[in-house]
Image (cartoon, rainbow, N blue to C red; front, side, top):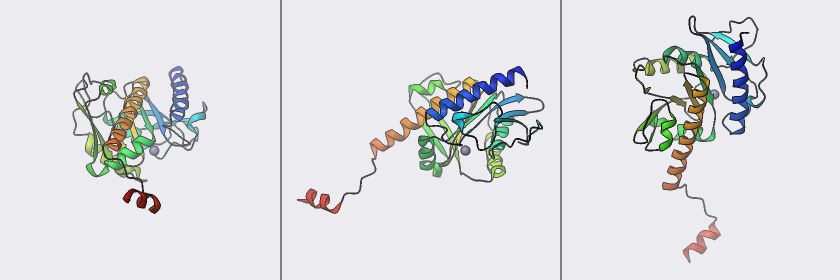
Length: 231
Ligand SMILES: [Zn+2]
């Protein structure tokens, strides 16, 4: 293991503890990766089925561009590894990909699945996303249908992202959602990817809470209470 891989693993373990504590990576959900090599493309990614609050130094595996383990360790990566590899191959300059399962991303992605995207506009915190310099803008986060068939999701991701222009100072998207499942985001560095999780999770909560304030779900009243109200 190289020195930079050891540093990345320690950082990813700390991120697991933090994200678990903040409710974004509960149980064995979520997976995290860093780009270990650009040519050929190889990622260092969390192994399958590990509690993210207690990642050990051996809970990572190196995979190739197709998501297959390539370090001879015999460790198995998450089923969602292919999505990390697809993002790293599609988006220029990606150094890390983080995937989380928060309450707010689960709710909001389910609410907007029919539209195929979440739009968030006008908030100061949007400036925490790479290339955004004003609150007076809209961030669009694509929503894909959830599936256990990762090659199909990866093909949809390629179809939607490959035709976009990623060369400008502001990327067309900073992440995407799987409906009723969670968030994928990335960054040129692990710190940038971590910041994107933090900013997007804040924005998802604000968006969902503000909708609930505008159109609160009515609580069912017991028949006795209903009679009292009618009197
Ligand atoms: Zn997941």
